[in-house]
Length: 267
Image (cartoon, rainbow, N blue to C red):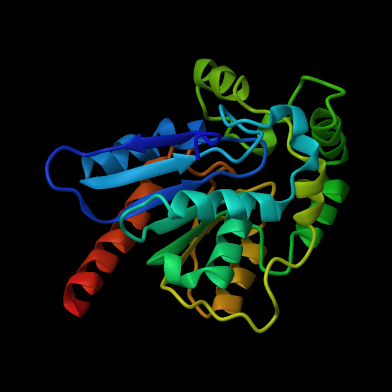
């Protein structure tokens, strides 16, 4: 565990249960939750954790980044789960949403509930990948070159809102990094088997303004897991960094409080 960066936000007083574990997406690390979500949930009494996958953020392995697969990231999450005293609600964004689905499928006994934010769908993101190639070929090529280390310029509007203040946008872009080519290819493959059923309570969130993951894709995730997704209007892919991020956080807060009530009733 010493090899993985894990950020922990501990509230004052007796923390609510269950704790929250945040899982980042491609090109990101634990820092993406530190900006808004960790302080928000800390202020509402939740213990919150955010990890950086191997090769990301301040976790070890940057030199071997392109050898890592999505299953390696699942193992990272599982290793963090093993250190927590209570089963958490696990919250995944984008590629992190695919990792969370794999954890839900492989280790449902290790988590209380799950949240998917602008997530890769259960069947993989081939359709969204192809749509991005057709509709935004220059940005697609730039992202590919960035991940290969052939440019340092990231196509930021794929992830962030144009409404994000320039100073903040520059700060966030400076923290982005290339993603593993193996893990990137894994994003195109089926995430979980076709007959998978959610074995824990699940909240699915998306937006109609996302360049990476379409509203239609988020709706398909809801159909797959037989739950009604919440679609926010005109937000960016990085919903936790959008100017309206608080609306997303409040939806997760309401879900988390319901889970706390359910646990009390079952105790």
